[in-house]
Image 1: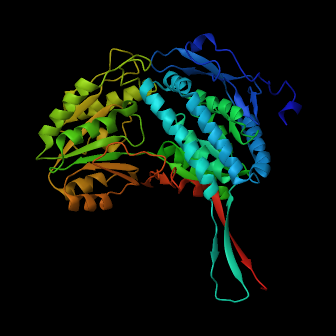
Image 2 (image 1 turned 60 degrees about the vertical axis):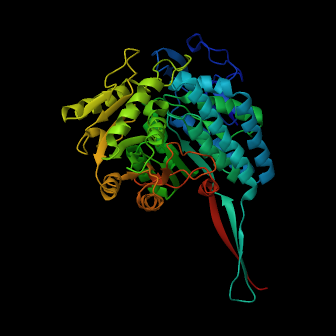
Length: 509
């Protein structure tokens, strides 16, 4: 359909593009700077672009097409047309195509990881881990595509039979964040395509290159034109593009991962036409260490949970609640691990565990939280200041003598800050943990079986890690309660988010 558009509106680009001078070290075979709409690489109609920056150095990596409402509507049109045929493709064929996409991700895992490190900043080891996790969703949902079952229902009338069918909901719009620029896409897109839906993806303005690299691999895998579309846009154009993605009549489903504040705006848009939504919103995860816990295990779990991606994960621990009997030993052990195990630097450098925060605003927020806490009596056990490595870097920081009145315990820091609150009783810890209006993930360490059951059931979160600081897995449902969102992603439940149940009654038998 796009071949008929005049070149004054849209510029068709060659399938492969050379690496630009600002993108040194990035794989030319996967580096894309244009929108992917209807199976073609397209620049915005006004030739506008925006820069993608390396958060470690501030250097420009590449200029990416800045899509607006016009390109967004073209993508939705392409997805809507493709849906009419994709929905009829047998589940086995959809499965084979998703499996091929997975295999291509594995074959290109090192190049995909380099793209993540360049635009996101996370260390290469973490970036490679994200690619393996992200690819796993295509593998998982390639298998789930063939397990979409209906039911035959027994009814009281002899001349009737009842059954249910599960059918794809239609065009799904996918709006993703920057902290996991590949995995947040595949977790949604894998389920959508397996169900028979088509998608339009709007990646975060900070990290569009990963989404576009996935589009190149989708093309190589044989994903039909219009089934997977990507419309990158700048922060300035994001509100207009987001509104169209949530209000266009062709859209049947909206899936969003991001802040609670933005999620509420998108929910208001969706309400006007009663669209289906999945929302994975903000977290404020508690990490509770009870007196019965193994201190070494708890400290190691805290390190892994808090400082992965420099604290920029939606499920990372944000409030550390440590019982008084074990408090001092835990703080000492965690401070030692931070000083010994964590190393700041450019994510491409060997041995680096802590890359930059995504931008200067994020680093300033960490600094604000530390200053506020210290001004109210918190004690710095280690870290506590911006890193000399660069303006987007902040030292991994541990605070003790923290109270619930401090900013770092009232809102999500999204950075390398671990504030420790001392508590007396289990009831006190549960009350503090559940006081937040969000509930995505929660963690606790205990060796008391009865306490484990009590606390796991009483924590008001969608996911609980018991004696474990890392809990994400493609096989398990991901999502929260309260203002942390609606719906579940991954697992056997994730595909249901893109399906409608149709009841069929046969009479006159």
